[in-house]
Amino acid sequence: MADKKFKYVPFVTEVVTARYPKLSEPDTKGEYADGKYKTEATADEDYTERFQEEIQAVIDQHFAGKKNVHAPWKETKEGAIAFIFKSPKKKPQLTDAKGKPLPQGAVIRGGSKIRIAGVIAAWEKGAKRGVSLWPDAVRVIKLAEGFDSSQAFGAAEDGFDAEEYEPTSFGDEGENNGDDAGSEPDDASEGDASALKL
Image (cartoon, rainbow, N blue to C red; front, side, top):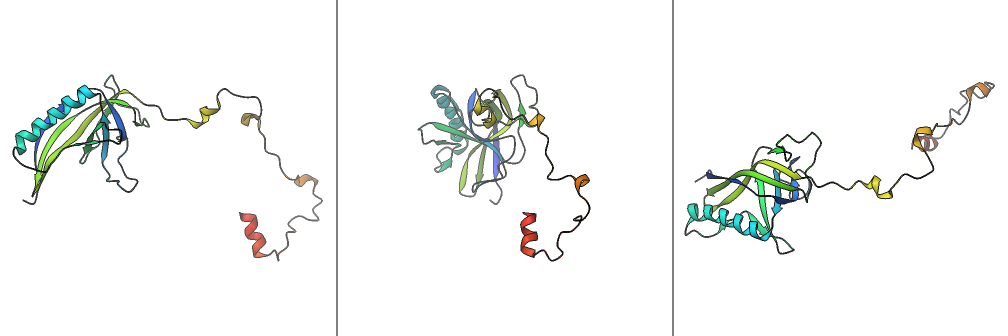
């Protein structure tokens, strides 16, 4: 068959930890960019096992006895299980812990504590089959803060104050007798002119 066939089972996760999230903006940069909204997520051992069982039940229901069924998780370098959530088309609804929309400019970073609601999509296309986790909404329980390099120096120090800075001029036209006004040589070399532009 040419087109994929889908069957959907809703899910709502417990609190998980975002890993490499691209939820505020789609993934459009880098070698593996695919233009989709997505994130990986890890959880404690207990919930990891229970969520895997929930997903496996969908696999068993739709692909019983079939081999090479894609499952939406992978093992990290640290040996943990990371679930893979990827929206095929639309941006998930992003809210705070109270259910209010995230303000514009808020970025969900790796390490943020989130919950995800969506569907487990069972699909089949030709000889390929599997299930995917499609996120419809993401609730941010704890937003991981980004590193602000300007805060690395600590408290303010005595010294230069940008608010008090006034640029000084290199000359005062009022003091010029006019003899040299506009007297830049007409034959200034092109090399010198280019250097002045740099």
